[in-house]
Image (cartoon, rainbow, N blue to C red; front, side, top):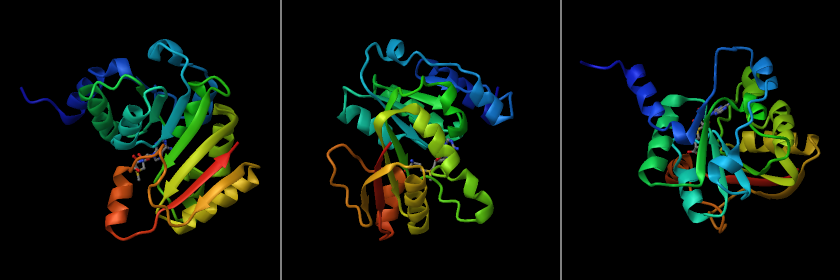
Length: 221
Ligand SMILES: C[S@@+](CC[C@H](N)C(=O)[O-])C[C@H]1O[C@@H](n2cnc3c(N)ncnc32)[C@H](O)[C@@H]1O
């Protein structure tokens, strides 16, 4: 019997249930949902107390899977709201038997319910949607409302590392960081992957192939 696309997706996600937490989306009010703690026992899941690096908007998971392999003493958590996209990351992590990666199928808006305060060392924002229209400004992942969420997740002195191809979004983000009182450690307007602790993302490859410049900002909270 032919399975509906959605049914098949649910089945595929269920097969990865040991490496993913799927948000309960029954509460459509994100503010309410964010307020109800459902802390994920990351130390138990990973079996150690290694530092946690969180990627928000991981897409198909190339970055987080390659980083996890490169840095085996770091626990990577990746958040992605679109399950259709996330499934590729889940299945990749399974196939490659990566043990230090865990996924959250949720919106960034509710991340605070899954982490205890100050439990994250780094947040990676890779090629987040720039959403240039004024009306969508509040959805940008570096809007002040998200920075206050990140401030709660990150430990004191924790870092946010952002890459984007979009100059206006880059400028908007730098301003937001400064307004939030975060210290801008570096702001590079033509980033050519040179950092030891970095790998190319799917979108980065695509934008570079198009001859686009990559902007990279690192801030300390
Ligand atoms: C342009 S893609 C970049 C994917 C990947 N980071 C890369 O560099 O190739 C942005 C991703 O962020 C996800 N995203 C956007 N807003 C989000 C939010 N509020 N919470 C979680 N994920 C979000 C989108 O679903 C999409 O998969």
